[in-house]
Amino acid sequence: MGFPGTRMRRLRRNATIRNMVAETRLSVDDFILPLFVCHGNQVRKPISSMPGVCRLSIDKVLKTCGEAADAGVGAVLLFGIPDKKDDEGRIGYAAGGIVQRTIRAIKKHFKDLYVITDVCNCEYTTHGHCGPVINGEVANDPTIEILAHQALSHARAGCDMVAPSDMMDGRIGGIRERLDTAGFELLPILSYAAKYASAFYGPFREAADSTPQFGDRRGYQMDPRNGNEALREVQLDIEENADIVMVKPALSYLDIILRIKDACNLPVAAYNVSGEYSMVKAAAEKGWIDGTAVMMEILTSIKRAGADLIITYHAIEAAKRLAKGR
Ligand code: PBG
Image: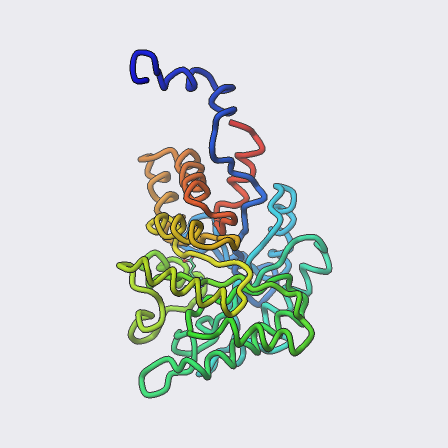
């Protein structure tokens, strides 16, 4: 019955009981740390719009991997910044490319660190779109072929999982087939299944040097106004044998995470993207919010919405905070 027999405050009286009845438990096992790798040696180039995040050369990536592993973060997601680009992004599958070399270096030094690679062409094309542009449009089917090449080159270099982020139709199936034919049938695919055309990617594009030189990505990424369409995207990717499906960005799309989690029984990942990170850092720097508390609240909300895995630039910081206890 209601008040006064029922009093919700009974189970909120101290930390012990609050912890016992907590419905959501954020864990370091949920986190994946994105890293931007560039050529050179001893390079640690700060990204001005993402305080605390840098472009790193391989030696520095190894150092950060050490810090991640020490903090208990078990997985990283690699983004490559090449020294050359081409019109179709084919440089992205060079065996000696920046991501391929980084995978080998990480696997040599940190055998158990789980290495996921972003598979996309936008970092590798001169125009910053995710595939070859034909008659003013990013051509879907030729892009799949290049992506499959890129995924295979990452697999050959020894990555543990590939994560295609381009939003072309049919790319999960295309990549799966190429991997299987080459003997990588056990390599999982994390699909950026519901990826929205979002202004929250702004800082990332500075980091990855992947801003489209003309137009935008609305012809291939999803319209933020749509939710049912996300379920169709997920359904198609499951039919093409995706192993994990992702929603991106996370914070403005918590409803989508919840709906996908309810609709399918695959693990669901969420990408706490660059703009979400930068907003917290900027407001905290100004003293307007408690940055650590807001970070933990955001990550908890993503988990509560239904995400099993969370890709976040906060990974090391949040892992350390979790280790300290509440
Ligand atoms: C595309 C890609 C993007 C992000 C991850 N992969 C940018 C885009 O689609 O323009 C964004 C990640 C972030 O904002 O943190 N390769």
